[in-house]
Length: 288
Image 1 (cartoon, rainbow, N blue to C red):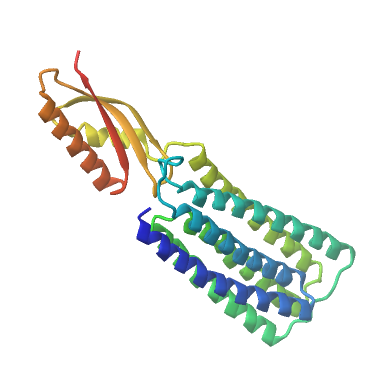
Image 2: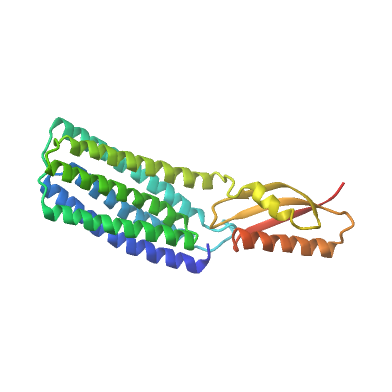
C-alpha cells in the first residue's frame, strides 16, 4: 500500500469508529429499556464493530512502518494480523449472544416495543448501511485489507438490524416473545459467518495463497512476441502488497540488452494490469 494511503485508511477507521460507538450505545440503551434480547445483542455486535475499528487503527499504525533490516518486505502483514484478530473478536461476540439467547429461552421476557425504539432502530440501520458501503468502497479504492475485512464485519449489521426490526414489529402485532431469542440466534449465525469469512480471507494472505490466477499472468506474458514460454509463475500476499515471480523462455540469441528491456516491459505490463506497486521478478531462460 502507498504510504499516503495509510493515513487515509486511518481517517476512515476513526470516523467509522465514532459512528459505530454511537450506534452501539443507542441499541444497547434502547434494547435494555424495552427488554429486547435481539436489539441488545445487535447493540453488542455494533460495539464489537467499534472494537474492531480500534484493532484496525493499531494494525495500520504498525503496518505503516517502512522497511527495515529485519523486515525487508515491510510491515504490511500487521494489517492482516489485525483482520484475524477481528475474526476472533467476532467469534467470541457470537458466543456471548448464544449464551444470552439460551437464557431468554429459559426465562422469556416480553419486549416493551415503542415507536421511539423502532425509530432508533431505523436510524441505526441507515447508519450501518452508509458505514458498510463507504468502508468497502474505500477499502477497494485504497487497497486496504483491513477496511475490506472491517466492512464485512459491519455488513452483517444490516441484515441483523433488519431481522431485529422485523421481530419487534412481529411481537408488537402478537407474535410470541420466544421469537426474540430465536432472532438472537440468527444474529449469532451472521456473526459466526462473518468471523469465518474474515478468517479465511486473512489466513490465505498469511499462508501466501496465490493472489492472482497464474493463467491470467501467463496470458499477459505470452502476448510478448519474444517470449516462447512462461512457467513457474507464483504470486503471493494480498492485492495491496503484491509479489509476483516467474520464469520466461526466450531465443538464446537474444542479447542481454534486449532481454533486459523485455523484462522491464513485462514488469510494467504486469503492474499496469494488476497493481502499479507490485514487486515483480522475471527470470530469463534460453529456449532449448
